[in-house]
Every structure is written in C-alpha cells, then in structure tokens.
Image (cartoon, rainbow, N blue to C red; front, side, top):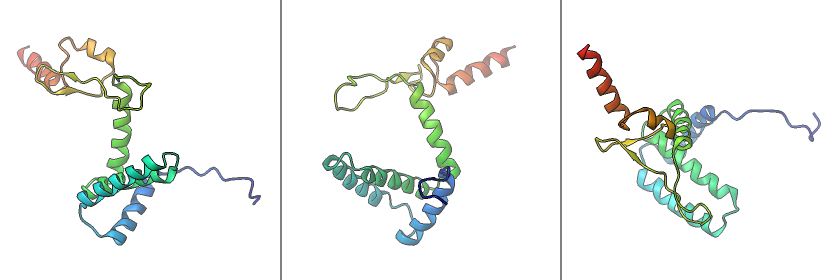
Length: 149
C-alpha cells in the first residue's frame, strides 16, 4: 500500500476505553485512586500552562479523566453515553460572561421553584414549562393532574 494513502479507520471510543481500562488496571492496580488521579491532573494543568500548544499535555488530562470515570464503577458504554449527554446539556445552556477574556465562562443556572437546577433544556423549552420546573417537579405535577381526572 502506498504510504501517502491512509486508511479511513474510525476511532471507536468505547473499544479504546475497554483497552485503556485493562492496561491501566495492570499498570496502576485497581481501586478508585481519586486523590492520585486528581493530583496528577493538577500536575498536567501546570504543564499545560507552561506549554499550552502541546497537544499531548491536553490528552494526558483526557486520559486521566476517563481513567477516573471507570475507576468509580462506570462502564465504557456509560462513559460514552454520559459524554454525549453532557455535550447536549452544554449546547442547550446559556453561557454568560466576557468570552473575549481568558477567564472561565459560566453557564446561566436556571432554578426550579424547589431550588433544583433545570439542566439539559434549550432556553426556548423553559418557556414551554410555565413555571420553569425541573423534570422531577414537572413529572410530579403531571402525575397529580392525571390522578385528579
């Protein structure tokens, strides 16, 4: 095969997580290792601040975060699903703050009357829920309405 022609091979995150977990367990042992992983991430953050263009330093944090996720008992399927779900939530959030500055940009927190954050809903959906209810309160109110019929 001509070296200038690359195969179109798609990366499968779920398969990679299974292999990564096996390697990590053999190399570092089992157990949660939460403090060790968090301290390692802190070290990597310092390295990123020193060399922000070094892609491998960013990848180190991704690998460490995924390692921490499976070590808390989550399967590769759960991690992949959560990654997609969280991105959908972030896309549907409203983000405030000065995006032109190099500082954290926080999402606007929409709160239900019970105090619980309303997450994962597009801004326009909040308007549809007259009282701006979280999913739990909305379901409870629907159930109470149905029972009253």
